[in-house]
Structures are given as structure tokens and as C-alpha cells.
Image 1 (cartoon, rainbow, N blue to C red):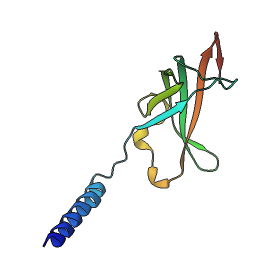
Image 2: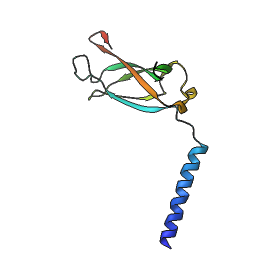
Image 3: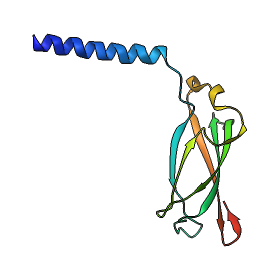
Image 4: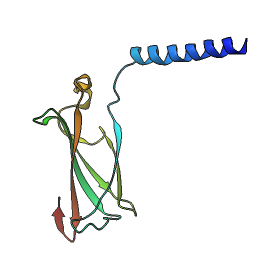
Length: 120
């Protein structure tokens, strides 16, 4: 009896998850990104303001789908954390990207202010 109950519970959970996802199959418009930032000498950039421009691109020609910018600060380990989709959009809209085409790549360009100059 316990085996039948366990099987029915498992089937119900699978059914709810599969059909729940197909009904609400919207793709999230935001996702997390983390990176460790180093300068051109390979040294960690710690506790520094960092401007970042990122692009979501597709295909062999790297067609630009979306671009946004962020103004962030690294932590004591040089770690930079942001949420892609929450920056200042400069091209396109996250909620209009056709994710079903697959092959979306992320391009990152970090601009770090070091001793009054900008390095990329």
C-alpha cells in the first residue's frame, strides 16, 4: 500500500510540475551574473566602482538582441554581482527576446576606473 501511495504522489508531483510549467512557460526576464574582475596586470580589482555593458547575442554574426549597462562595485574579493535584465537598457527589450531560437550568448564589456583612467 505504501508503494502505491508513493507512486501516486510521485506521479501527481511530476504532473503538476510538467503541466504547471507548460501553462506558465514564460521565460524569466532577469537572471544572475557574477564575475571576478582583474586589471590588465591580473590583479584583483577590489572595492572599486565598475561600469559594465553586456549584450545578449545570437548566431554566427552575433546579432545583437539586447544591450544594457550597469554601475556596480566589486567586493573585497573582486567579485562583481548583477542581475541581467535589471540594468539600464540601451538596445532592445528583454521580454521580446525569442528564446526558442536557442544559442543566445552573453557578451560582457567591463569598464574599470583605475588611477583616473578607464581600462576595458
